[in-house]
Length: 444
Image (cartoon, rainbow, N blue to C red; front, side, top):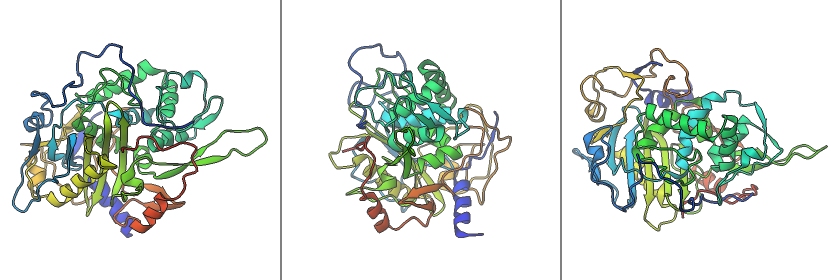
């Protein structure tokens, strides 16, 4: 077996749950103008400090304000340079939450909410070659200052084009087109909220599918991590989330070949930028940035066969790319602390998933789940019993970035332990981007 295939198998196994499953310029988004009616529940906390009583889904400690961590012998201390209002780092395979800070604080999610949009709608658009002619109605109602990929009225795009616009450029125009293809805003919002409830992401309330700030629209670091874990089950989701660059259609002109322009992923842990290197082993997932939400980010990375999920929301630090740097620090800590901490909670299974008891294997794997719910690291790829497809995405075996093809500087690499050299990544990130859009969703 080749090294890449072994790695792919290891990474896939690392996120397999031991469950039996049933069932135009672009800018950072701007807040909605004052007005409108906020939802009664859940609602964002107006104060700059977390509420005393938060959800305890996943464990009682996760509902407490402040930092939650249980260091064991030899465990490194948490990074000092953490300023986010809320964050969480968890083992993607066992579901063990290694540490958290205000994990259930209901905050504005910005474009990280697009993970839920994709996890909900991707299974409904299975033909990536399907084309759609964009109408004025498709692009109506896009918020002022929204991040855009550059979709034009009276132009045709494939479903694949639209999803690349969502994942790489965080394009609200792409989200609006897909929403109209899904029979409109009301239906899409209802389906997203239903899927969030199915995942037990109970801090989440969707008002705007693209994550554009709206009164009452909230999520939490815990919920966004659950959503990312669900999304990474889907092959297409994984591939889009891990794609660094892609060609996007320009305007079609009679008698001429349609030109394309290059778009680059706004996830700086994937692509790198001046002052920040690509994170070794990163495989997505989604970033966001609005005036109300601040910078938000959920990421997933693999190192030495272990896969971690991290979410960071609204860092107050003035450090450039603070949301990415704090996420990277938490990932570094998580990999170093693995096996040396007692979990402070767990990522719960979706409601239609039946836990399967397995022998405990290690500090993290057994401690979080409780009796009959141990989720140890598998020796090899596991197969979910009774796996089925479905719009919720919970009916297929969880798998992460093994074997995902990533477009890097015109070449194709496997997302695995043999990550492209940092020098090559820096050269790639410094290359001129021919896209007509400026860079959306980049935290200062």
